[in-house]
Image (tube, rainbow, N blue to C red):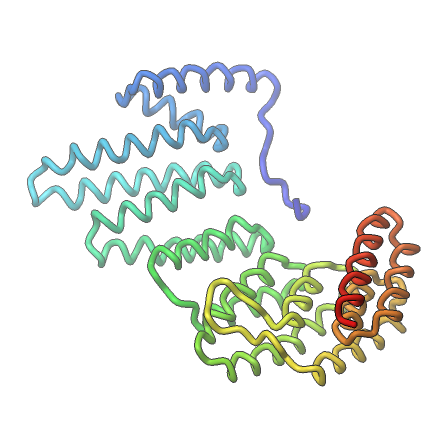
Length: 327
């Protein structure tokens, strides 16, 4: 995915050995064996194959058991013992993710650890873990800026801490987008944080949407065949709705929409076969009630993109039903 190899397959002779080790480790889990020997075996399998989600569940139970055991320690040694446990668990996931950066279960285990650590560790120590997670996400996105696991983890870490998006976070996303307009995850992250950032400030949100219309137009004129920016463009034209906040622009006004339609016409002069531009043009024409021209655009799309002919037929039928009701 994205031209970045996500997992290094072991040699064939090692695969058979890995399967054997995994079966042995799963048997330890079934027996609720949390001995040092069993833990070492489970760790070895997870480092070789981080997708063994059942063994991450083993580790979750191990962590909870250890925290209960450690709670019997003297107060003077309790904090250090807890920190050592969390450090070893985070180190394990880091080794696993180094081998397979897109392993769902390894990322989920880090979220589990952050949630549990928040309940046991002093805030000063926990804050270090929190900051480290954001640093790891940034480094991961330096290696593969479209790795949605990194983006998703960054959002979840913020949610755990109950943090509201900041202008610094918006600037971080802007820098990633400017570096690569094809970064779908960055566009999606932007659509998530923008409504929250301007919560209960509809006038400012309206201005922010207008600014983003200019940003996204840079992307679509630079890479008109890339779908990432077009999805964001369509979201803006629909009024940037959001389920994450009470504020929504909803109606950004016909004058702005007409201006964007004019922009699309300019692009289509340069790229007459750009299906994404044609789809947005259809959406705008339909919004204005210009059904004849909207249907003509769909006919053009049927000719340019015959593999999705059924979808365009559906849009035509839906528009006809809508237009008949509006009359």
